[in-house]
Amino acid sequence: MRVLGINAVFHDPAAALVVDGRVVAAAEEERFSRRKHGKRPVPFSTWELPEQAARWCLAQAGIEPRDLDAVGYSYDPDLVDHDLDGVDPGWEELRTTFARRAPNFLKTALPGLNPGKVRFVRHHVAHAASSGLAAPFGDAAVLVADGRGEATSYLAGEYRDGKLVELAAQRLPHSLGLRYEDLTEHLGFARSSDEYKVMALASYGKPRFADALRAEIAALGDGGFRAAPVDLSRFAPRREPGADFRPAHADLAASMQQRIEEVLLDLARWLHLQTGQRNLTMAGGIALNCVANTRLLAEGPFDDIWVQPAAGDAGTALGAALHLAAELGEPAAPMPGADLGRGFTDAEIQHALDVARLPYERPDDLAATVAQALAACEVVAWFQGRAEFGPRALGHRSLLAHPGHQRNLERLNDVKGREQFRPVAPMVLADRARELFERGPVPSPYMLFVHDVRPEWRDRIPAVTHVDGTARIQTVDPATEPLVARMLGEFAARTGIPVVVNTSLNTAGRPMVDSPRDALECFGSSPIDLLAIGPFVVRRPA
Image (cartoon, rainbow, N blue to C red; front, side, top):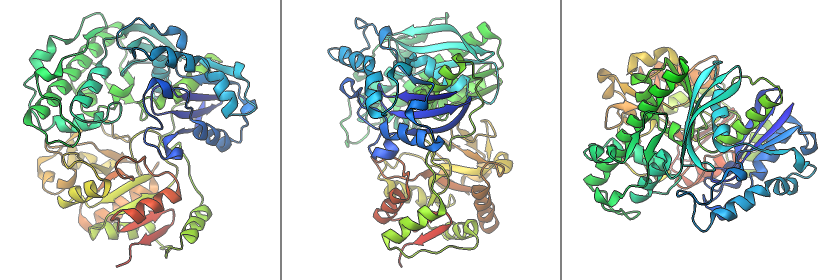
């Protein structure tokens, strides 16, 4: 059974391919088009499809469009209620029209495709399948929360024997995700893009507005919640992009963050009572809030939580494919990892280097060469294996640095053109993670939880210790990431620190690099000292 999944409606267009119940490829259109988030999150962009991502997924498996058994499109236009608050006034009908015509748009983009094979999958069902059917355990509760789908913003239920049992939903305009987006825009950041910046800023504030927000954002005790639009100017003035932050801005971020966490806890407790499940799976944009995820695991009723690494809308492409495959009788296999995107052979990489006319070398031990550069406080661009699916760099398209020097945080933020209040993350050998970090799950391979840095290590790894003493770690298992693990081991042998700074290999406003050409362009335009690309290294001239 060959099923293609497509996300195209709101933002982060993506494609994913499931063959015989197994995920074989998944990629976001931005990695091909080099346009951050693929397109603008507006109704009149709904016609834009992840054409390049879809073609690559099919080529990766050697499948022609005519060979597909089904195509899942992660939105059902028949479920839209144009009279609801929370939809786009004046534009929603255009979005719906474009979505309805998706089968024919796809036929044009993928010649040979039978448009009758395209089926609409409800947005939140696609989110749910991306976690519930991809998780490493069987039956589990599932919680989806984001900005919006067709007419709702939330789904709670459980998977039993591979089938979704829906227990609760929340209709618009009530939405935890839209309220977080409102705050993102109020603080001068890009809506549906920069919500992670709000989470980082929250650590600098005090939640002194949380009591006031409780009156407007609250769980209702029946699996739903109240979260209508809030007049945020009551708490802090609207910040224009590029303007200075005031303490009230950080306090408002902290207050909204705390309130979202509290409501999620209430919803999770209700869901646990209804299902009795020990495990919880999560997806939707809210599931990328790693601070909330950690509190949910620490204080909530579930023994384990698995979050889809591509929890945002890109992941609905994967979920739509998994959902249809399951409906067609193909049991889903657990997601093998996040490295589901493009990879390149050594010969292809060498050809790119030759075309660029750059001097390069092929060291006998790449891991040791990179570890030595990092120990010497050099910044390293790391391009290895298949690209990650989702927003986190997980050791395939990464910028690496020594965590023991505080100035490396500033250096990396300068390289990337980021705000200086934003943290960078550590990757750590899985078997040594508990030596350095407490609170939070181990293993944690997808950077979806935060951990407390143990007090005795905070001064030793200041570049990855956030202002609140936490770090969003990625644990590395030698069985699944042997090269990264060897590099970490070599670095630890030289420095006594089994941790390396890991942030995404890109600059501000650009997607993560995906191809060798992208990597060379980033290396050439940024103050990066060494590029480790496949088995080769390129050094910046002295």
